[in-house]
Length: 167
Image (cartoon, rainbow, N blue to C red; front, side):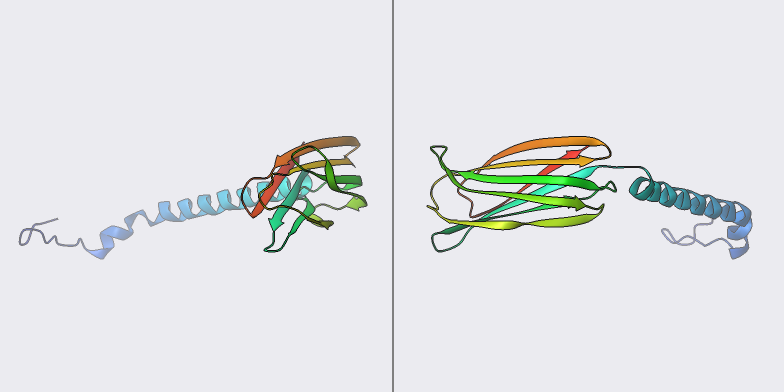
């Protein structure tokens, strides 16, 4: 490259840029092969290899009136079928008295699906702290899983709790 007037550089002829075209087509083929391999591996992970992942989402929210509500749902984000699901949600006040409780049984939940649980509504004081006790029990892949969670509310009006079970 020759210097014309200080900072301006002369561009080389176009023919010298195309000399490595054989290597660039090999590189493109290699990149395509790697992308296809990654897609096959991701597909095997998602659909072929048995994977048990369950997400329990519980949402606590206060309205402007005296009503406080708690919703829950179970998301099977894995590809293994869940069977004989037993879900329990209890709400306790600061003195550990049970204010409300809910039990729900679900026969099965296929992979990549969601089951909503009934909502609990109760009259409560927005300035009081509550404890949410959540238990879930189910069978998957020939094993029985049991998990218990405890969440304490704070001064927030809306809280989302996410609890994972992975195996």
